[in-house]
Image (cartoon, rainbow, N blue to C red):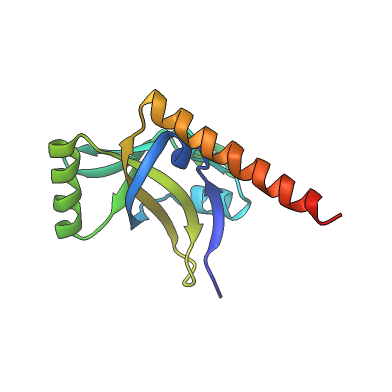
Length: 152
């Protein structure tokens, strides 16, 4: 059984150069896991940030669980990410030293049914980099179209 995707951050690759990716566990409440099973998550605007006691996924939106009554979770609360200490230390260093960002690329259930976050170690793209990416994308699209049309 392969990973089951819950949410994807498509904008990440547009806005950043992803240099490396990491898998992290995430501490969730029961209503959050249930809500994720129903597919209620959005990580477009989220990011990972180091607080004093660890790494947190900030601003990820997990919809309230429909049957969660008053014990429901706060949809956008910061959630602690779980990684090995050594990995965390390495990431922390790269972020501080090189001004990189940790961007959540996707949220998924792994084959053991645990919720995981794929984090990308990202360098921000400057405006001209984004334009370059767009140009490449448009050119590839154009190429595809030309190829498709040339077969007729």
